[in-house]
Length: 233
Image 1: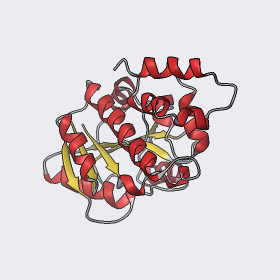
Image 2 (image 1 turned 120 degrees about the vertical axis):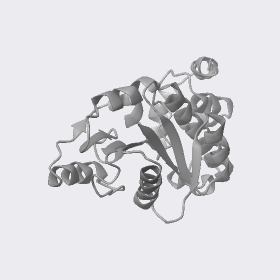
Image 3 (image 1 turned 90 degrees about the horizontal axis):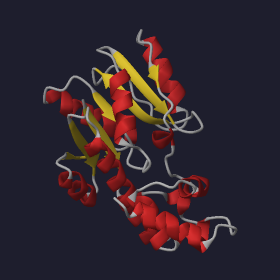
Image 4 (image 1 turned 180 degrees about the vertical axis):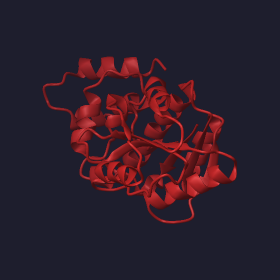
């Protein structure tokens, strides 16, 4: 199955982090998080290909570096972008797809494989919620138009209900890496509490952002250790 990664323009990304990060820092954060997501997809054993749908030219360079494809987004909104990607895949002979956002830097190839392994034949829907069980941080559908997409606030419940309305019992997986999307300062602090080998954590520590956003009792040595581990890619 192919994975679809929708990507906003980096200049428009992570506006809820504006009180903490400059515009340039938010753009860099969006870039390194996407790099980590694409790396995890490349490490998956069950992914057939990866397609980024976006208007961001830097996202094109990132996905092409891992052997993926880029489709320029033609509409507006996340649900519309996923529909466009699904139509493109169906036109090219694909019967299903897995959507993963570009802001879940702790996702692993193992988690992606777990979602795909549990995903049964068509018609089928698989869901991974965010930490609050409000948003949808991964959605596998077979066929690509198995349900209408409803990304945004409350999308997890909406997608589950849409599957049930279509006569499909959705598969639901709770996966910690996929569950953490970075949208607000609390998410950023939570991310920094992990010791993970990611480009994102290395950037946050090396740039000095970690020192600004972490609680004051976090020592410089702790942050240095995190950064060192994160660079062992």
